[in-house]
Image (cartoon, rainbow, N blue to C red):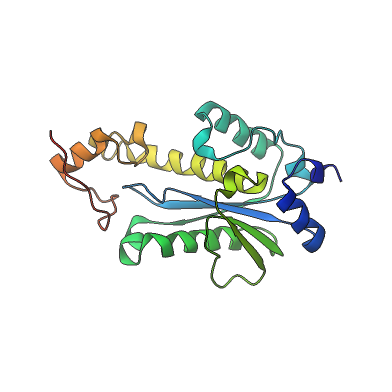
Length: 207
């Protein structure tokens, strides 16, 4: 099929064996603030209608290109699922467990039962009854994982920037929760807000 010509060799092999493939990725694992967001995307005919040539790790794309892809993805009516773990869950358990839970939720929120899943990273998702393959740097190797990465980052950036109005001193509008020098400086000045991960150690810096 045409879609097979545009996916990675890994994705083609999975589709040939299982009939379909879902890519899963998360965004926000290394952030100091807010939730970790996961997304899963299924490779089907609607997905095939997209321009897949520029899909790769969301962090390597400009915001303009990410936004354009998300618009095309939504306009085409592509299928996806979202999941998240908030900062309180991250603090209560740990970021690794919270990440896997958000990935599992994204799959459970998809409108089909998965037959085969490709996951960015080195860990499989517990309690998902289907074939799983964890792929290091999968977001730059597989189109479905790359697309999931772009959508997850789009959603997470939107959410974090909404928090900016409530806690403007952390510069969330620019850093979307990551540990820039201004962000860390203001954590040292004002302390952590309700949205910060209390379990994440923040290094003091000279002010």
